[in-house]
Length: 371
Image (cartoon, rainbow, N blue to C red; front, top):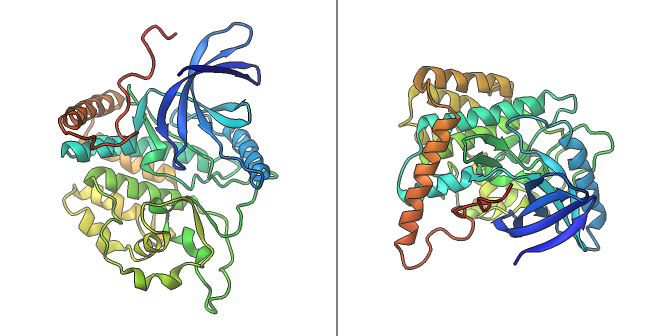
């Protein structure tokens, strides 16, 4: 049911939910218009979960993300437009780019039993590397900390955008500190060194000293994204580590900001046991040059990875120029459209939905008459 509310000088008409956030709350599609005339634009309203206990920290993180967004103006970064409140429910207002997440595209490929092309995977990853290069070289040294398929949006026209800098680290003055024991970002796409502060020290009583997040951790995450896009499965999926072996790897009070699909201890152990042999096994059927790029991005030692997002972007761009010279946004859009169409047809043929809510995008984001 359509509803309307006013906030901070804007009128909002909430149209429908378009997907679920990682905490399960629905992200809403809305039309936004200034009080006194002006055009109407489509935006996304991301709900913020607030309780009496968390209201102060939530407000601080919101203010920080809004301030940080001023440093993140880039063609491959999703824009944060501001804040809105419907009664006591606060929202972060994002630009709306009709399309879907890379996670949706990968799920559709699995459903349709197809592989995404190397051109598609590399073009998407190159755009994300370009976005990370912009964030990393900012004077605030912004580290995303949550690079994952769910945070990579692809428009219907093939434009790639990295979104959700809510977990980002920066040197922003007066930034809100991360609570003790909280693992920021997505544990399923985290670099091994990001877990170091959450592992017991030698006496197993205290955490190791925290160091500022390293931008090269984002490149490890992007390497996992690239490999998963090409293979159709997460590199850490194989259950090759027993849960009984994982007890001492993390401090008992460690908790993840984004709940992983498997227990955090198991995910951490798989990540900490993930090495060059695992990368070689997962990438063995890929072109040699692409294997080298992935292998370098996924080095356990940060000093052996690409030393900047720009360096990784240049390598990915070089692969495209040599192997897929005509592959750009138009080709990304076309491949995505074909894949989603095939997945929807298959989904419609079964007695129950194989792809649950939020897996495949709705047929249209807005009616044709919408300005």
